[in-house]
Structure formats: C-alpha cells, structure tokens
Length: 558
Image 1: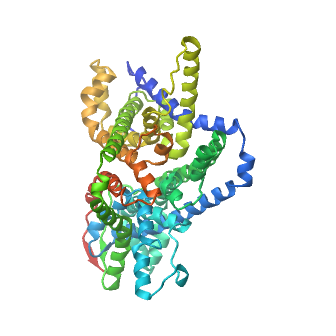
Image 2: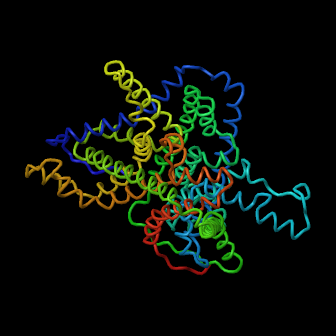
Image 3: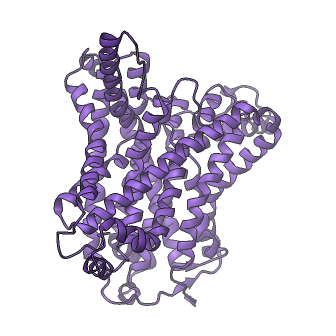
C-alpha cells in the first residue's frame, strides 16, 4: 500500500530521515552482496565436488518439497476459503478464525510431535499391532513419517493459512452478480468455481503460495529431523561440517535464485490484482445454506486442517508439558526463555523504530530514490534465515579479525570477537530479516493520516521531528504495536539463523526444542514448544479480530 506523501519534495530538516533510510538499505543489502562475493571468489572452490556429489540431491529434494507444499497449501487453503466464504454449515463463523490457528505452530514442532505419534514405537502403530496381532514392521505397511512426503505434509499443515487468508479475501471481493450470471447461464457450482471464482482469485492465491514457499525454503528443523537433504540442510552441512564458507555461499546463491523466482510470482500476483478490483461499493454477498451430506462435507473440509495442524499438536504438547513439568521447569530453561524474550524484544523494538524512520522519510520527501531505498531495506524478509546468517556472520568476522590484528599490532592486546559470535549478530540478522513486516504495518498506518497535517505543521514552522512526535506518532501507534508484536513472534520462532549465529552457550527456546527433539527427547522440550505456540497465537488473535469484522451475510436457501 502506498503511503500518502507531500506534494512538495522539500521539507526542511528531512535530511537525517532520508539519510537514515539509505543507511538502513545499505546495511540490509550488504549481506546479500557479501554472499555473492564469497560465492564467486571462494578461498577453496568445492563447486565441482558439490555438482558431482550432493548438489543434484539438494536440488531435487528442494524442488520436490516446494512442489508438494505448493500443491498441499493450494488445496487446503483454497477449499477452506471457498466454503467459508460461500456457504453456511455448522460452526462456519468459528472456522473463519480457527483455520488461522495452525499458523502459530512452527513446522519443526509439528514434525517432532507427529514423528513421536506415528513412528514404529509410537502409540498409533503400537495400537494397530495390538489390535491386529502384528509383530514386526514387515507384517504390515505404514507410511514413513520421516520422508519427503512427511516433510511436505508437516509444512503444508502449518503454512496453508497464507493461502487461506488471501484466497478468502479474494473470494469476498468478487461481485456476487458475476457469480449469479454464471449460474443463470446453466453452469453448475463446480463449473462456476473453476471458470469464474478461481481465475479471479488467482493473483491473491499466487501471493499466498509464494509466501508459503518462501517459508518452506527457509525451513531447517523439519528437513533436518526427517533427513531430507534440501539446499538449506546442505548449507548447514557445507559450512559447519565441511568448514567451507565458499561452498556455503554458493549454495546460498542458488537459494537466492529460488527466492527471486518466488518474488517474481508474488509480483505478478500483485500486479494482476489491479485488473480485478470492483469499482464502487461491494454488493452484499449471500451465502448458500448447505443441507444433508453437503453441510457435513464442508464441516470436515474445515475441521480436519484445524484438527491436524493445531488441536492434535497442542493437546500433545500440553500433555507432555504437564507430565514432564518438573524436569522441564529448571533454572536453565528459564534462562533460555529469558534469552528468547531478550533478543526478540530488542529486534522487535529495532524493527519498529527503523520502520517508523523509513516510512516517515518516504512521507516527508516524495522521491523515487527514497521509495527504492525502502524497498531495498525490505529485501531481507525474502531471504532464508540460513542464507542471511552467512551474509551477516562473514563480514562481521572479517571486521573483528581486522580490528584484532590492528590492535594487536599496535598495542599487543587481542580484542577477540567484538561483533561476530555475539547477540549483536543475532539481533542484526533478525532486524534485517523481519524489517519488511514492520515497514508494511507502519506504512499502512501512515497511509491513513491526511497530508494536510504535514502541510499545516510546515506552515507553522515545525520540524519533521516535532511533527512526528506531536502529531503522527499518536496516529500510527496501532501500526507500531502490530509491527512490534509480529516481529517479536517471528523472532521467537526463528530457528536456522539462530542455530548458526547464537553465541557460545547461548540457547533460545527454539534451539532448545530443536536440540532436545533431535535427541528424541521431545517430551522434555514440550514446555518450550508450547510457549512458542502460545506466543504465536497472539498475532493470530489479531488477524481473527480482523476477520470477525469482515462482511456479515445472511444465509439463503438453495
């Protein structure tokens, strides 16, 4: 959404605002440039070795994972959005927000839980063996949860809300008259859906799928636990196990290529939305009252994703957390929780402040350069956490080594690690990665503030700082609060970047859950996972309130 800007491009005192914007954009872009530098000029080029050995598997698994997740989130997201928007059935108004709940569950958490539930020694297969008298795995067939298909299922269950949200918004915006014309022409509901509703909603659906696939590309916990060797898992292996930075950077460049393709898909979706906007006021939509088996089919279409993606994981986590509370609630665990709260709060505050500066700079100086700088500052959200960690860690390490060599040469004192290997590197990565979320939220708030306020303030001789503090800040505080909240939750859940950049002996709740689950101790880490899920519910509640204020329509008999 474009913010309202002043017609004049001059605003006395605006220099520090746009200078800060350019500075933030440079910091956000620098890690990406560093990745390309180390990829094309590696200290040890293992690219031929990767091509001959691991790279084909990395690529095929990554493509298979993204294709599978794309199909799954499309199927779940579009079907649930369509029935919730167009039909009345039992508990429909509750499913409007219940379908968002899986978004609060990290993919790696649900992967750990379903593995514990469905593996050979788990309760499901144990009950089947007891019921049918089976003894060994060769006596029957059961799907292997630790597989590419299992990873696709786990991610699809928690990422479909991206498609659901945007598809539902698209369906709500469609003119009911257009659908009525299709029905009057003798087309069935299914034909109307496939040839009218779905093509119109395609841009929003494409954006939702692109967002889900970006999260899929970023995932490490699930694919590592399921031993699915994707590009992200390969980056960890090449950097940490092979100790080869150049190879890791080269894999990161391939991942960035995937990101560019997804951004292209997302851009095309946004660009095409302009063709489908309904001019004037939206007509009131009437939902069809389903009867018989149709109403229960619609109910289960919506209930099953909520059951598998949220209810089952939360019930299991709650059970484990209560049973193992004495073992989990330790001084060490409380330190991990504090670490998570600390780095997430600092990063969220940093994102909110920088977003306020950038959004305000775009407002006080109507310049294409400022807007381009703002877009560059937002690039981090599209970059997978593991890739961004490489781009941040290496330049900071080079800086630390240069400073250490300089001080040691002149004063005989070693400075050690100043920036790399500290919480600074971790917080900086969080800020670069999630700044786009804050900018979007604050931009939306600024767009609702009339430009006449700025003009009146300029006439009175107020500086931009005075205008922001006295007039704008109270008006955009809701956008700031939203930015703080969403970034805080995203930082709490972030795993790949945290694993790579956390200081020595510094664990967060996310890394704590990952390390315990990797050692088959999911029960002992359930309390930490439950806390992450509960924190993740907060922005979902905010989204639910938005949905609750959407169109309210009466049923009609059909």
